[in-house]
Image (cartoon, rainbow, N blue to C red):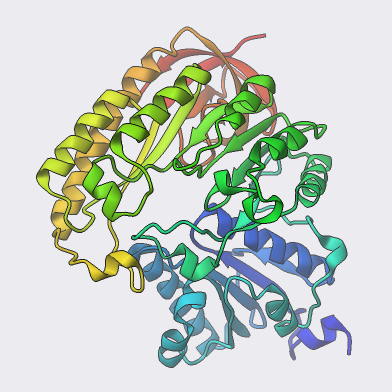
Length: 444
């Protein structure tokens, strides 16, 4: 029986697979790989279609990282299972981190889901919709982002022992993808118009240790930098302990590697770092940030912090606030601690009230807002290379090399005065700056 015949129900329309993606950019990447395989099997596939069909097979790629993300995933599963109950869609399939971690509990509560798959079950998922995994499609994807940039996963899983993190439970041990496979994938993307690669992994800086017995991120960067058509390569999710300083040499050598580094540091006091099992200290962290800035003076550094970790005292929090004010990160995100089952920190008492956690996050972000405003004012009058992401309302919206998609600052151009093609690079003189947005005009 042919694939399309297996998928087709008694309906006037052929069946299609509607992929719904929740969570982080790593899930986005996984959904794109799944969609590429489905297309390679001649199956009609769409991403988050607004119109549902009565014989749609909905595949929900879930997140199970923290409480809010888990609740969003559960709500989405319930939404589509209700549509199935009403006969408005055909099947519901759940995959990703939440189902990797909680399938027994979820399947007992939500019984009209047709199949549950984990994070490494792509072949089985494909079989469930009448498709086969095609090895010749290695590196092929259907992008859900604008075609000019792509999230580019270089490794799966994590070997770090962080006490608060459930990622190893959901994603397994660190597994680096071979350099030659990644280069092939980058060439395929470039051939189809991708200009920016946003390198992602749970830990970029561990890359290569499992595969080549040494850290190979610098070598990978050089190889990717050589791919024709790739104009920006951006590094996200670098781990501070064991940071390979040689990647900064490559950043200085290669003009298409952005002066940008996302390094989630989580906290700064010694007792919090020790309890979090981060493998570093306050002084080592401060020294590392200074060394990075010394080596690449023009670098934009992004970090992420956690407020309300078990045992975080007012003194710990005040020390972190003082450090944030002194360090002046270009970009910073902050989250409340989430008490995750089966992590090391779960054995600790989650003793910070939710309202205190939220208040501490707000205080940190208020400090960062002021820092961001000050740093943005320094950009007024300067000219930057900007990649145009979209047109929205009266503005073309883009980013500098110092900004990652969806999480960082944006550059806005008045569409009544300037015209830019989405996916193109333009030179923009900054004329005005706010807390997180820059306004400017194109210069020749």
